[in-house]
Length: 424
Image (cartoon, rainbow, N blue to C red; front, side):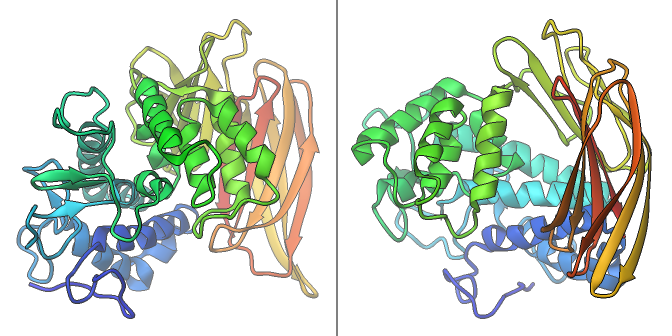
């Protein structure tokens, strides 16, 4: 039985086999995003075989694999993962960054969904469901019924086999103690917002311990967490220091601003409504619900939510629609056609998109064309104002870098949108 070890290793991932799910989850998440727009990249004869080695190392679904153990990091009995490869501590094994474990299992789900591997998709869903529930119960104790009576906090930075610690492995800075169970921030993080009152209480505890809401260790990460309980306050904190705060190593100002504005506009995570697809979420701003779903298939699908709402999602696209908002506009616009002509002209790599869009509610607002490279970086963006019930056009994007895909997003006046992505 073996292990996949990266060199130069860190945090004891080599000699102790620590943190493999933390570390390799980032690679699998990146691989999933590439596979989403470039499926052949993930073929077994290309990079897919290497990605599967990474997954098999920390989340192997097989009990008979001669190379890697079954579920190296996840402990079904505990209901969550352990991070140390060597559990020979006085308190047993431990896990600090539960959010990195959640990121890893969300990555497995995404990779399985984007490559059509239902075994990996379902494994990721199983691991993600258990890990996020355990995070609620043991790290955040959202129902205040699991932490010992003599525990002085509403949150634990580290969970051990025989106890808790309000600490990290490398510092006692309270920002790090809280932030290590938030980063990296992404769609997988929405489970942290399932209980808004608990998120508010944990944030208030952080502010009290910190002596105020001026953060200098990981401000962007903590503002993103604040958005689960008071997104307007989080956005205000960001805007007051947007030009000067230290950006966390894996973050960017653009991503943080996008996260905060999205949460401010969408409202609270509503986990009382489920869907028949793993890539869906529902939000409630107090007056209306917003339904969001992504379709990784090559054909259009209808996503059905448990409250009776249905959402038509085009192939390889994200769609969103409002619920009972009283506006009467509850349908997302449609991308009727999208064809791409990719060609080179001198130093420029061009992608001309011929498109046609429509909206049953007759309130089209914008079409945005974005050109991406293989890492997901936006190389060029074109915005086209549209109106009425239908529109069409031809839009050219270009870059001197090598593009990998181009996306089209159509949005109506109510904020409903549909996105389609084409690989080049």
